[in-house]
Length: 82
Image (spheres, rainbow, N blue to C red):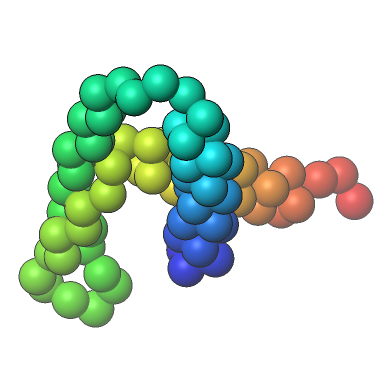
């Protein structure tokens, strides 16, 4: 989970550096609205209290895609013909 979050942050930060260079050369335009955070409740193993976690829609999509990819890898690894 931490690796996936780090990958998302790095991917988003490299894109903003390129955008910053492009906007310096372009005519001034109204700043785009930031994505509103979307919060989810996540249950931790061994805890009765759920934890509230907030990220943007893009971050949630990236984390969900990584979780799906990992789940598919685990499934194919455990169910291969021997």
